[in-house]
Amino acid sequence: MKASRGNFATRIGIVMAAAGSSVGLGNIWRFPVETGLHGGAAFILIYLACVVFLGVPMMTAEFIIGRRTHTDIASAYERLVRENPSPPGRFNWLRQRLNLLWPLTGYAGMICVTLILSYYAVVAGWVLKYAVAAAAGALASVSDASAYFADFSSSTWAPLVYALVFIVMTHVIIQRGVQNGIERFSKLLMPLLFLLMLLLAAGSLTMPGAAHGVEFLLKPDFSKIDSSVVISAMGQAFFSLSVAIGCLATYASYFKPDVPLMKTASNVVAIDTLVAILSGFIVFPAVFSVEGMSPDAGPGLVFVTLPNIFNSLFGHAPVLGYVFSLMFYVLLVLAALTSTISMHEEVTAFFVDRFGFARSRAAVFMTAVTLVLSTLCSLSFGLLADFRPFAGRGFFDAFNDVTALWIMPLSGIILSLFVGWRLPKSLVIDELTNHHTLRYPRWLFVSFFFIIRWVAPIAITLIFLNALLN
Image 1: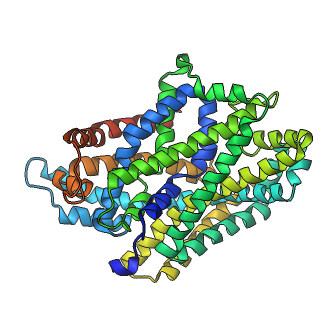
Image 2: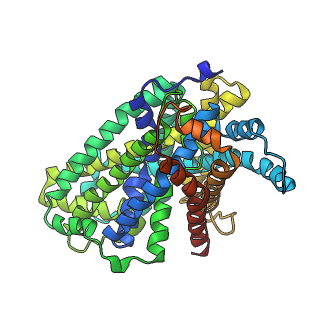
């Protein structure tokens, strides 16, 4: 079974694939939005602290589950509970009920990624449409970017076709397997993504008014820091790294025994954070270079604000405007694709491991489910706009709500409690040290367990409550 599942062949392939799972529209779209809404540099400082002190331990915890079991996320929780029975003692009735709860987290993760992939593919389809429009030079003739986006997203067939194309692109890569598909394309897509980001950042920094954008990113105004900024920074860190929903555990199930989990998590978090920061250096110098543009434009930043900026460049520097718009939307397509690959793979791996499906058959099944759900999400802006069966919410909004507000934070809490309290401490240390072949200072283990057991559950609970109350 393990041989047929495959493994990542190289360390760089592991880092690129895991980083690709984390890097996505959350870095290049959501991070600038959150930064703009919460004051710039002050938000970034808190975000950096969150990814270092919370992100790395949480990602390492998920790696432990995947690498220890070498199976899909649902089977991983079940196997760990079965192979590590709770010791007898007080509160046996509670332990027994929790032993039924832990495995549900794996199934919840698969439901979560299926729903996320379904609406994420719609947004990725929008991005793909803009990349095609940028390549054709069509963005230059757009007089009202807001109306252009509204007309496209609310139409019936065009956004649906683009979403379906994106899902098929993901399917083709997944069907090729771990080494020939996920690893090979991650090693190609991630360096290309970085190259595009560096070129875009360099060009953005040459724009007039870019200095104001850099100041916004690098000069913190600590008076802007309040509880909402801190909660938003923690939320962005967890959202950006894609922890606790099973994608990273699935990738870790393909790790070889000698892969250093904590070092790999640190490298992935560093790449993910670098992409987020670079996106700020692309977006904000450009925003501040055009009169009337605001850094707190919100979710419309990518599809309304930036096209307006590109249009202004088309007028004053047409070649620069064309190149910028094309590279930016190609960048977003690549970032979205690396994320959809990991989400698709999580459920594909489940059908391969649990039911013995051939990879091609499992991939077709997951793709078919995603196509149906993505169709419903896409039509939520057009043909089904008035059909709101989920407490007044359409498919797109309902899928987003149930994953972002409920499944992701609750899965994060359960992950931290499971690794911190349910698994034997000796097992966790065995995985962290690769069965004592790696040496770390004692304070590192003490810090890891303190964060996983106490800090992470409390922090995620605060994010969860803040999202529910707002």
